[in-house]
Length: 117
Image (cartoon, rainbow, N blue to C red; front, side, top):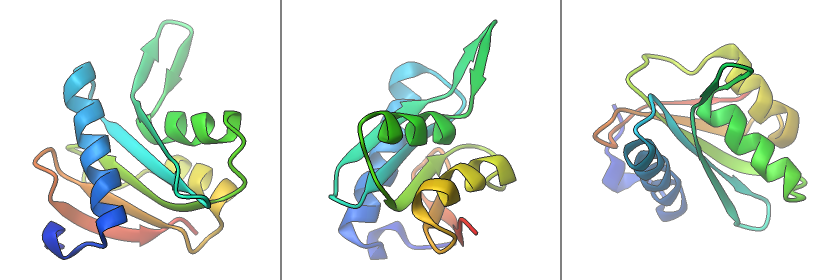
């Protein structure tokens, strides 16, 4: 486990944003990413009959659609014990293999930080 208070303030911010998106929308996961300029993109799980996207892939898509060229970090708030390989691949595609992906529980405590690569 990682003490969330020991996180870099910018990383703590994206965890908080991801947690808020999850709670506000009543979805299984919330996610947030930070681009190379410091802008953040926040999303929840998309679960429509014709479109299913994880919160993290949705946040990455929002960053791309807004013109982000790279990612500095990503965060997911979920009850899952790991970040899926598909989600890490989306982060890697935009941010590169060393981009950190933080996984936090629903209480905001970061349980895992892993590179996207």
